[in-house]
Length: 373
Image (tube, rainbow, N blue to C red; front, side, top):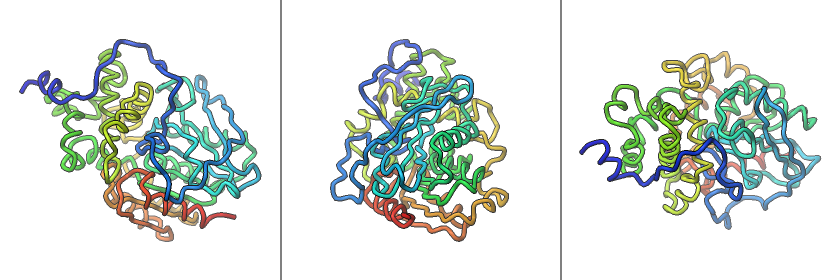
């Protein structure tokens, strides 16, 4: 079967008309990175989620020369501070993210990382690196007059939470991490290059791989090939089609029991969410399109597990919650991190990747309860 026929046969991700990079709708908001935190219409009755806390503050900071980074604060204005680090990168935050924390005792700060959520410019890749995001968190902390905070993050949020703690250990009181992702080549290959997850989810993988001609995938790999499209090098139509396929692939496999097609397409194929999510993710996974460089803008592959980094944070109380059947961020990374931080606590749950699976909610809320003042 030719590549063109393969695309027609399996693609459920429609191409869209040529458009500039701007949000197509302001009526909907999606969030959560790899997982679907509050964005897929989940029913949280019977879970340990706290009631939705009140919004008590919001604002933006000027970041770099072009970015405006949005933040929002929930809970008790005099409570113990929390930095909630969302996933993706490119996922954005949602008010429901604050429900992992007791609103009577926590002051929860949600920050939309550069280019996504309520931050502007939309889907922007310039001046957008791991180190820029760490600097933004510090600027938000200083703006809000916070001395130190608990840092909470899942998936890419775990990557960035760890990086922040390594850079600012004196500002980090505790770490609560989920779905550990260390941005290593073997992790990216497992999920994006047909070396792991595709063996378990062949149907959505077929849609993902159909975006790329076989000879291009064979020569350069899927991440690099998607990168050319997501940077707009093949035009807006190809960029938006690739963004939907990239995003829907992740949304299709994030839970042990996959969500309905309506839930997947309602969030992950949304024009705005998929474009920011896919562009920014791929940008980070290729370190700005630099072929052969370590991903995540890190100096070396596996940088976060090096003793020089783990020695800086090994004193910080750390809880790791990991789905044993997580096929987005496999459990081996959580296990390796736990061994590198021997005083950490590791909980392996009978779940997939999503933070909204009840057993994961249970463990995450138990961790934040443990660290209540």
